[in-house]
Image 1 (cartoon, helix red, strand yellow):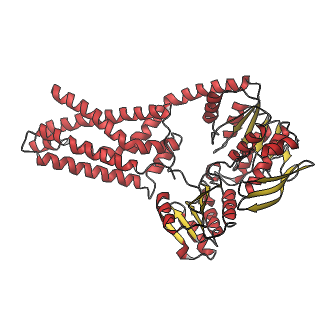
Image 2 (cartoon, rainbow, N blue to C red):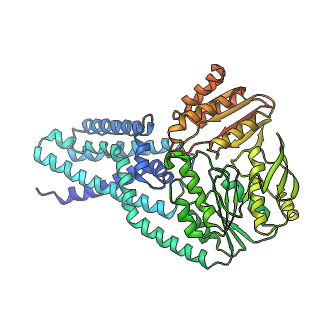
Image 3 (cartoon, rainbow, N blue to C red):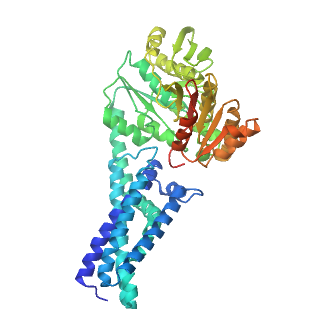
Length: 528
């Protein structure tokens, strides 16, 4: 079977155009893959999970493309089929561009980070889509030549409308193939950062726990910076690559390096300790967060305890069961005592050994006092006096999106959107109930709790009793939240179900008045 030169050129150029157009459709899904740590399996699980509208949108796109291409070929069949085929490219391209523009209005809550890795993935995905389009183009042309019927020539490229259905699989394939480069490249990057960490003369500090890691790190940074040169991993950079990036961007010209350490599975903390080799450590606390991946609370305790065993000097939260000789234990060696909660902040007495420091901070919630106490105990281990710690506490500022208070048009907004653990959620609701006026909570529920997820969401729903409005976002966890609220005696008319945070904000815009308070609790990433 011999293809003409013009047909070959047309199919190649058409395939490149198809690859580019389909790449536009993939942008949102590539962002989800990035949120999943570029892991293909959880990405595909998200794509095909029950209730996910992404798959339905791709099906509708495929059907509409097929109908448009067929219709345009039919309308222009009075011309030569080659011209009709060429004209049908216009609605194909136009409809995909229209789809892309429409999808941009559904921006991801976690913005896609156009890193070098993401760009490499996008290029790989484009090449795969172009190759698949090219193969399909030649297959369609070959089938038309074999059948040799004018009507089939006319509709031979309608099969391109099926390509959107394959996009999740192509994206997963691209991510898997790119790992052949990314894994060795990442290891090289990690080795370089690990070498810099090993050569540095600064004191290394590791901070882990099921909750409060970022807050304790930020509070410790604020206090320590009044006496030492301190570098801390920014935001929630708590993975090996995150810490490596912090080292690469900030260097290690400091006295103290604070490394936040996250864990989703057994072995994660050990890997981070091998990298940072911390002399000091803080284990903030342990709860059932990430129970889905760890399997049991015992495994979580054991994993967090790795840092306590590896570091020479350690601060342990009250819920940490790990024993470490010489460790500063919350409730024994230090504590936040006589905690007084208000809508303006938290007051308490900070006890470290025999010293007592009166503290008043604009931070909200009971855990603000505990996190400051943990950070202060670390600063004590690092050589700061009680007077220096007291002065440093005055520099502490609220951590963005962690029970952060603001006001708009007389309405108080409590932004706890980064909170995703059971204990923190309880404290956030407790804080909300301190305020006057009508009180509302907006939440999609808690995740990554494994077999107890439904139970914990029901318990959270019960805590909403007494609120004036419970706005539940999405479909994944809202039923247990609703059931928990109603079982506790809540009123059905106070529960509002909305499909997205945007819809929740529109509802609030119609119902909030000056003097009211709204709590945004755990704004789940798009992958949920």
